[in-house]
Length: 389
Image (cartoon, rainbow, N blue to C red):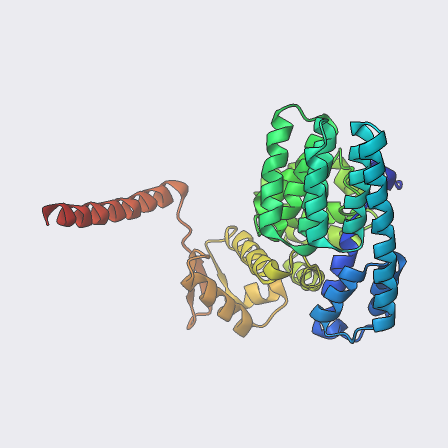
């Protein structure tokens, strides 16, 4: 995908997910009094007379309600909805089915634009029922998924994704098939299914046109972050390190490039610094915020594992220096992850040595089989006691 602005290829930004992101930022302690963000959000609300969304923002962020502004916006909403309802009535009396559908669609889009979630969902359902074309039906479902992503309504998102998948199987076109993968990937991020999200994004890296969700730079950033935590090293090399579309974007996103190559090239001290930067970004992303601690923890484990796999034993001092931290910190980290079964090594605190004891795949399979066998025997014994009674 070339880097020039191709946003006209995407669907309309309605609802605009950037507003959900700005609202989320204003809910963070460090941004509560951010005048720039407040002005940005209020200007967007005023521009589209988003009375329902303004009420929600004031409630969620504990803002005082500007009653004059709210009354003005509500009056404008009533006026516009009256015009849209008149257009629907006129189309039903004097025009054909296509015009009736278009009139209903305009009302649905307007309700969505002003932030009336329930009204928009209801109107889109009515429009969907009046829509015959498979492609137009899919576009309505994509709109519904965006509403779900805006409000992070998981039930609404999953129901519409399933509906979209069903329609795609009936014969959706190439562009909408790819668009659905991006939507699925975005939702996978929100529910911490990073591996599936990475697969969806990698499938669409060269065909991305979903600018209604994000710009291409952000899409590539997500793809790199998700691939690093999900893909084995050889796949990361083939799909990311050697990916021409990704490398083209990384030239203008040095922070993402540094983060990727510091891990791949085993520059662990630099990787830790870059990971701290990534943690700050993820913490301010409304989609991934609930999972940013998990992501950072898993990336630390990945880096420790990558280093330990190269040695049979190494000193705590060497490992601390490699990561640019203190011996006490690395000792605490290793102890914690060893106890959780996430790192296969043991620490000799007296000698200051870390010894790896990573089991090979056959040993792991054998241990897993024994464990599953024990569970099966326990269940059989419990069942036999019930039957005997």
